Length: 591
Image 1: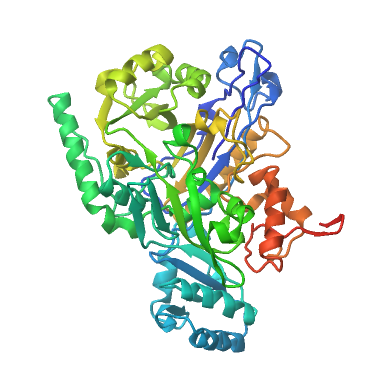
Image 2 (image 1 turned 90 degrees about the horizontal axis):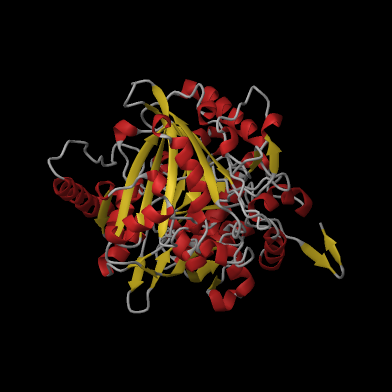
């Protein structure tokens, strides 16, 4: 879940977000493992509510520490996370099971006869009769909650080159078949001299990071914050032990990180997020305060359009190039490659991971974090993870806030900076580790099995470069004035626990409603929320789609719909929340 509070430019002081963390985690039992889950994303703009209006059933814990006059200034928007882990191939084209048997056979015949296939397409077709069909389909599903027998595709196509994508698009239209696209890992090319990289749409974030690190120690890319590895049996664990010295601990950690790097390429298929999905929705990361979103750093792309043409930035035009960077590229065509602008990173960065419980004044520290985090050095990112833990003092359940940070510089620069701007955290040299940028990515991405979290809330700050980019520069609109967003997550292992956890996340959604903006309650495309509205089998009016479209894209939704009408007027590329075409007739707009 992501939320952002906004600063009131007309007042000297900012009124900040304050709520009872204990209340949010009521009746939430921690469980090891991750099978099913819900992510919720909130993006915030300021509104005021008196604390007394909340009611005694939802007491606020912070009292007058929010603001002297007892008001709240908060924004929240909720989104149910529905992200699929994609196949380890360039692009996977899925066909819903709605076509006739004749259309099925005619489609295959069309593919076989397509004139420009460099490799036989029969090798990349999987029907439900194929022995590999089920394993391929299941392998691509990250969240089993969305594995539904009724939604199995008629055909899965895993193209090996662009001609397969072209043939699939053309032949499916001829037979009246609908396609859905997913990405999977393949080629990438890093150009250190020009600080760029061409990455095929299916390359995983881990592949991209690893490829960059093999060519340069001073280049990086501001991609997603999500862990590089999933929580399955293939994940690594940072071993917890007692060290005789700080240097011994650092040496041991670096050895473990080296093991990560040696095996990263063998875990590509286990990675949760794929850069194509990330970039099509925006993509925030630890470098975003310095360099913006992943989508802000795309400088070219290759897309196959509805006519089967392969277009680059010049041939597609600036409107379409604008739309696919954060506006959901699957609405406009099949993206097969991105050209990325790589960003400079220092040879050494500093990371820290500092936990504070309620007994250690976590509430007060979070409050101060809200006041200063947007004005910190652009090279410093400090996010907060909030979860239930057992107190190290009393052994009883408590709330712990963990401050996770990466700083683009050494510890000698960081400590004075923190002492001046955020002394309340009490950061000391012993909390910090110096390492390369790629090591910091792995450090933040580690997945420790015995610390698996069934529920947590994450605060991620904006500011810096995010404030400098216009809300209309790309379709992602949440820019200047957003202080931070909140990501809420719950996951579970047992099937019978689903209802309880869904009810809990629903109560959380309702609990936050009193504090959120109303016009609209914003959402983040990379955490798709089908509860805020869906298309009617892909055929939806602009007016109906705008109910959810404005929550994702604000005023950019109108432009997205006009681009859609220009490049895909018959709405071939569609899904539950695809962009509908907005057509104009003379002076009248067809809505």
